[in-house]
Amino acid sequence: MSLSLTQSPAWRALEAHRRAIEAMSLRAAFANDPARFDRFSLGIDGLFVDYSKQLVTGETLRLLLELAHSRDLPGWIGRMFAGERINSTEKRAALHVALRARGPVLLDGVDVAAEAARTFARMRVFCEGARGGSLTGSGGHRYTDIVNIGIGGSDLGPALVADALAPYCTPRLRAHFVSNVDGTQIARVLANLEAGSTLFVIASKTFTTLETLANARTAREWLSARLPGGASPARHFAAVTANLAAAREFGVDAERVFGFGDWVGGRYSVWSAVGLAAAIAIGMDHFDALREGARVMDEHFAGAPLERNLPVLLGLIGVWNTDFLGARTHAVLPYDQSLQLLPAYLQQLEMESNGKRVTREGGDVDCATAPVVWGAPGTNGQHAFFQLLHQGTQLVPADFIGCCRSHNALGAHHEMLMSNFFAQTEALMRGKSREEALEEMLARGVAPAEAERLAPHRAFPGNRPTTSIVLPRLDPHRLGMLLALYEHKVYVQSVIWGINAFDQWGVELGKTLANRILPQLTTSAPATMHDASTNGLINHFKAHR
Ligand code: F6P
Image 1 (cartoon, protein in one colour):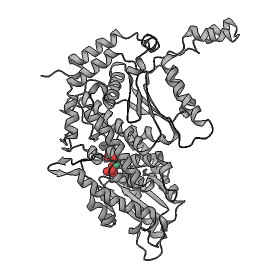
Image 2 (cartoon, rainbow, N blue to C red):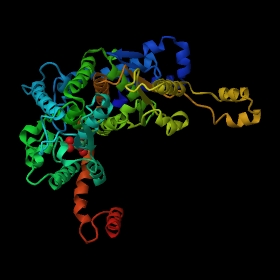
Image 3 (cartoon, helix red, strand yellow):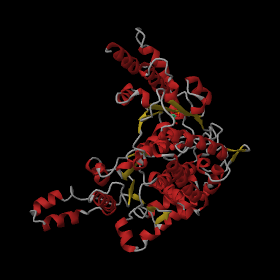
Image 4 (cartoon, rainbow, N blue to C red):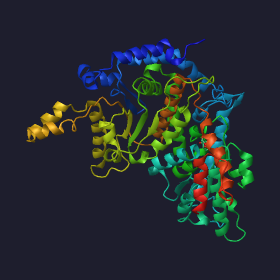
């Protein structure tokens, strides 16, 4: 019988190493090694990553790389790019890389990259028509508003791209995103729109998702109630799906349906036709540049040696933080307002991919897997939750992400923003000892007794690990690189943990139960078939409607 992950020699070696460096001080590590920053940072095509403020030594990385080899990481990277069915529970390939490949990518003898290229060509015509005004609504009006209706990967990716790349969006078209089955969201969006100039893009890989279909039907009813008699709502819809028949059955014209294969996972689908609403907003050239940025990262991931491979290094450092240093959450802190949706996007990418407890073979995983991913843009977070990052009892590793140049260079705003980025990573790393806090107060003339009293409150433990990711500017190419970096990081971690990153069975149970409960909300008979709490809540809801 093969050894479990945590019994393996590579894992054991890391545990012993962790004990050996328990007292490691990042402050001392920088003081003792003037080359630490150079040794532990790496730039690829303008995307620069500094991981020198992580709680690692050269030996930590060496042992993590040994772990990666012991888990056959190079083999698994090769399998993904080769289109093997690594999504074993669904017997599917995970070939999102084919959506940004330059050459052919064969899956069962079919060139899926060429297939995708044909869809991109159709998308280009559609985008140009919608942007340029040759495609219009039923009354001949130009589209002024695009509403993407989708949820999860069919929402978070295009919403992030359209928001992050707002400076590249045409001012003629406003993009809106409706995901929630809560009618409040679509009601608020529709309240400000004209039916005649609105285009709905229904994005759903399966075209069976309850939330998306409910919102799509509401949109169709809204159009029917507002368009002049006889006008067809069909001119106000496009669809993006792997289930072409269902989209056509809904009433979307065949030439407005854009497909993609089941080898693209929902949370990896922004590069596919799922990006249509964003592509209309930013233009197809910029959408191509986004994919090209991801391709550069793919090439790096597939070709660079593991010790100089960014997704590999970030993935392994994440495993170190989670499994050896005991971190249970991971903060994503974009110091760029345009990346405000990145934490939500990465939540799905990381937590839906690796929030699992069963190995590929069906056994129990015997270590912690994906941390809880959360975050908010800097500097807002500093005035809300950074207190816990600096002085709380939990270790929260964080990614800081910022740009050298802003699209909105107002006065000294950008310098102020980035000075906070750098200061926070420095403060988290260095901390401030009780003695330093005391001395500072005494130097400011605080009475000694009062300084003694306050010193413990004003001390910072430091040693809080961060990674800094710095882009030249948030452009389509660099955004593509950044998102692909995280995709591959997640894959690296799944390989170490021995789990399938590409299924999501954990979302099923709640969906099934909701379908069972739905009819019970509209009958007069009290609910009795559930546990006392669920029955009680349903009956309370019915009694108070
Ligand atoms: O329920 C989870 C999920 O399947 C995600 O994986 C997916 O991104 C989302 O729902 C939306 O699915 P679809 O694109 O099929 O509507």
